[in-house]
Length: 326
Image 1: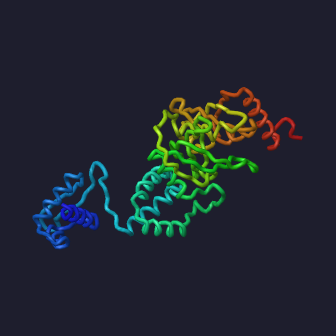
Image 2: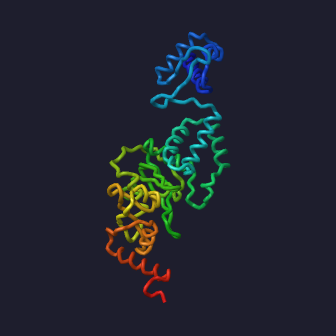
Image 3: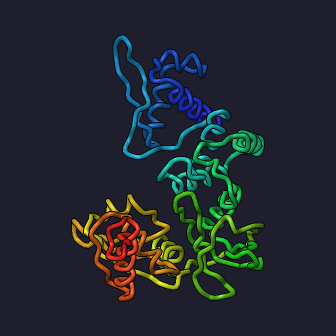
């Protein structure tokens, strides 16, 4: 049985290495008969691998695309290349694929031999991307992402040191049940249930340090929508004012103008949307709404409408067209 399994895996590796193989070529590579090749091809088909067989000149066995992605065999070089690419994508260098890349990387990392993991660390550590050269304290090590991703998949309680915003904010140990990792632009957030505060919390990963898996498993709780919870936490909760404004433009258009970490945008029909954003200054909110360039109607708070009017008057005076321009 072990010999058969090894031969089938060897056959699969050959089929993945080039587009077409004849039965004779495969038999010669594996040291078996063409009859054994036919039987092993049928075994792979039963496992979900779509292997086509064509006759004539140029014909042979070909591994094709199927309805679902079956397991892939990677040699050492391929595994390192994939892992490095996933690390770069998880770090935000490929737009829109950060979370999917992290899920794939956590699966691959679980099976990666130590000798290959060292190679991945070496390559990734000596690689930078142009949109990753921004620097600053919000760069998150992939090891931190992976540690939290593994704990979420298990699921397993974790502890970590967390430093809130503010120049003199004290660092404290937090013990949580991790639920989801959410990326917002190039910044990562953890949504977790805080066991000390007994409530859901959002943590910026660049402010987390010393992640430790405790070994304690937990049953998953009913949780709020992770994306919506994190978006509200970072775009509304920290601010003195939360504004709701109806924008006379499609939701997709407005979303392309303003990051998800700054405001929530919900469609209000095909040609309008509701923008919800926070700010410590109504004038600051008014300025950014004006810069969107669309017709806007204030829904809440009532104080925002006078702030918009006052901003318009001040801009008119600056442009030399207001009533007090002299």
